[in-house]
Image (cartoon, rainbow, N blue to C red; front, side, top):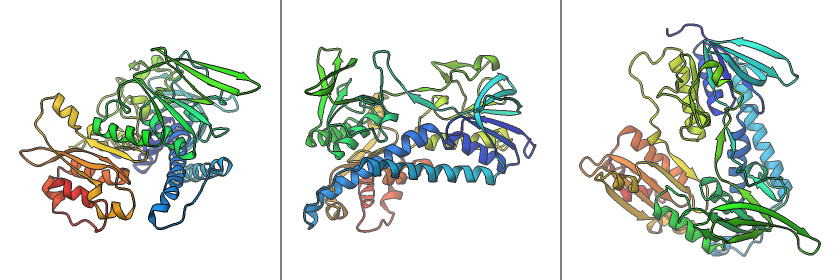
Length: 461
């Protein structure tokens, strides 16, 4: 019932867990949050934030190198890994302290330790000093996140063979880096280390980078990589990694592919996805259903066991911090009985996402290729940034805006943006899709001039 006092136990202090904790506490719940590593979430603070900080540094370096075309003298810059490491640590500390402070202000009980289900209403916590404590709960949220996937044929050493978490930043700047994996994480690392001055090769298992994304979007990124000297090894799947060393050349890493090609470098980076942190959670003890390690949930993020929810990467839905945060909020509302009447469930098809390469890439909603595959009638309009005065002022006219709409009603169904500030601009399309706006609504909006957002209006006409 709404307003009823309930005991929440949340295992995992990432975006989903902390969002649920603060909202539930505001609704009057008694909340205990169990986190073994890092309040704020390991995937968030050890992956997302450090990578974006490094990308921002690389982007600044690239812009400074392009300054000669903006009426400035040539500027030579290089990366200081130690200063970058300190900058990342400072950002992480500030974010962690901000989250911890918010939880404390809501009287959320924090326990540093590992939580495990021992039944449908009980959680046993083992603290960092080895003590155990049993907690009873009316509501349990599992939000333990994920970790980098490591294939059987790879043995990361944190020196020459790296996972993503070894590279924020790495012990040393790779002279010749081989990146395995051409998904979102892989291409971001390619972009980042190319900007830092590394020679980069990318092993692409398909025939385009970013498989599943709009081919036109992937083509722009591929051409950008080639222009920067990136070696694209297309249609190859890595099968083994060998580290050799000699007194003359030092250590060299060789990556063998399934088609016989061998790619060599000074370092190799694994960026081939992640796996859920579900081992040791006690899913069987509580009778919770799962598939390939992901907890099975319904549209309310509720498992098959009443009162037990799962969110974030563990839920197998979109692995985005924004999605996890929204899941946490919705779970708190649902568990506290605030969804008794009509309400909005999370529509994962309307979640905006971005890839922080140079150029940036962002999309939301229905993709053009998916619409054609479904035989759905759509209207597609595409306008390049080169028509924008602001792009000329920025000395960066690369990319385009593509809008997918319903030809009968004009309702905005989806869109893709490639270019500077795409991650910010996509929010306009995300709002349009969520609110059911039409292309006419966008076309009649008075955007700032000069601004890149004007291209959104032009693509809507």
